[in-house]
Amino acid sequence: SQTIHQWPATLVQPVGSPLSLECTVEGTSNPNLYWYRQAAGRGLQLLFYSVGIGQISSEVPQNLSASRPQDRQFILSSKKLLLSDSGFYLCAWSRDRFYQPQHFGDGTRLSIL
Amino acid sequence: RKEVEQDPGPFNVPEGATVAFNCTYSNSASQSFFWYRQDCRKEPKLLMSVYSSGNEDGRFTAQLNRASQYISLLIRDSKLSDSATYLCVVNNGNKLVFGAGTILRVKS
Image (cartoon, rainbow over all chains, first blue to last red):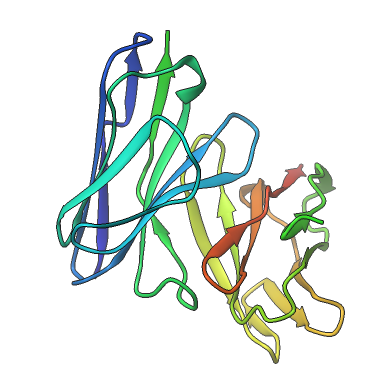
């Protein structure tokens, strides 16, 4: 069966510091991968998605970036965090972008001080 | 108009009650539909897919009305453990779009 791992579970960072969140998927090959952010009491906002190694699509302009160095690894980064980057970050995978459901990791709760 | 709209609730119901949520979507060409459940401070989890003919999974029934562009989720015999936020998810042609969710609180 497929599993998705995301870490760390919680993170407290100062404003202006860098960020790196990692997500890996096991049990499937060539998954579609996604990064979402959920602000407190709000819906999911799609940040990035990837259909293959090195292929990244950005949904919203921001100071975050994503990379996919390996088939089942997806990384979310920032060079300098802003207060507005606080939130619940979720990685997800699916077999295709349009018709199959997405399956989420446990999420990372990021607080910026 | 939002791509996917849900009544945010909260719906406060007693144990054993039947409760229904609706969700409307704007893209008439949408082909796939899902309901997710999200517990407080946790990740969303797939509850069920929604098929054109409607489908049932135990106490949960999902319906699709293409003409009116809405999907529904019916929960029968509510349990305390059903308390969560229920997310409606629709594909808009090039991605899945998540609704903001409907809060359900089941009380004893």
